Image (tube, rainbow, N blue to C red; front, top):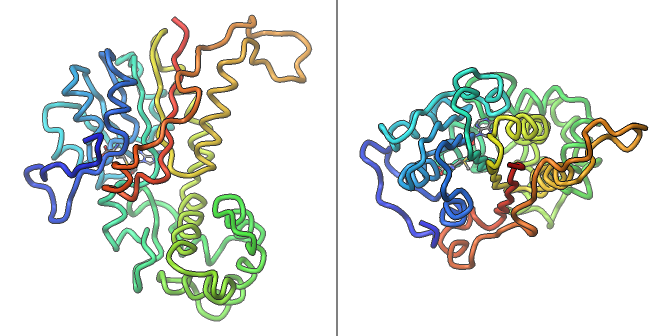
Length: 314
Ligand SMILES: C[S@@+](CC[C@H](N)C(=O)[O-])C[C@H]1O[C@@H](n2cnc3c(N)ncnc32)[C@H](O)[C@@H]1O
């Protein structure tokens, strides 16, 4: 499906379910020859299915119980599917015992999550402000918008949403929530419209809803925390590949890989090298791999995808 063409619907898939796994051929090419792959973001199971078809044993995990159900439907016996956050994978005895030689993270949301208005990832009118990656667990987007200090709102809108008017927007959210707590997408859309004026529209809504989602789920912190643990899980010579969809995510991945490839990875302030000056491996993708134009034409959600990979020293 590397050309982005839609695959046939798997048996039992809900109406409207479609595979749109991003950079499928490119991921398969990077992980070719892997015997035991941990797919840390199972989603609808598209990448896991492809890797299993290539002969790998696959454990696919996802923090979202609905994604786990979708992946199980898709993968059947082809892979083991479990509900687990990839930040907890390295501490899981079964996954440690699996000794993967390939790890894949395909970050962000799956198409079924985006398309299900009840999950609240959409700015379509009347959708609840939910956005929790683990459906039903923890504070949701409305809780965050109603409760976060204005400086936290501003930081998230600026850092994750690249919003130049983040301060004004944070102030507007704080003003509005004091009168009428945020509950549905329209509340956030109206606040954005009030501040951005003619600059607001679907692109701005998508960017700023994504910023809220990243903050609500602590996505960048989780990623930065998980990457070294996942590298530790890999057998020598194993490979980790990460697809990101947001510049902040891609930055976290790029910096981690660059650090790991440095001969000495001790903190600059440390007077004596304790890492023995050995690089942990090599960056496989000198530049991020991006989808071909025909994939983007077939699947607009592929547009922002960046794939990077790192091979652990043998
Ligand atoms: C883009 S989708 C993956 C699509 C999948 N590769 C496919 O081919 O169908 C991203 C998935 O990652 C999951 N996810 C995001 N953060 C996660 C985390 N910290 N731990 C586990 N799963 C996570 C989401 O729930 C979502 O199902």
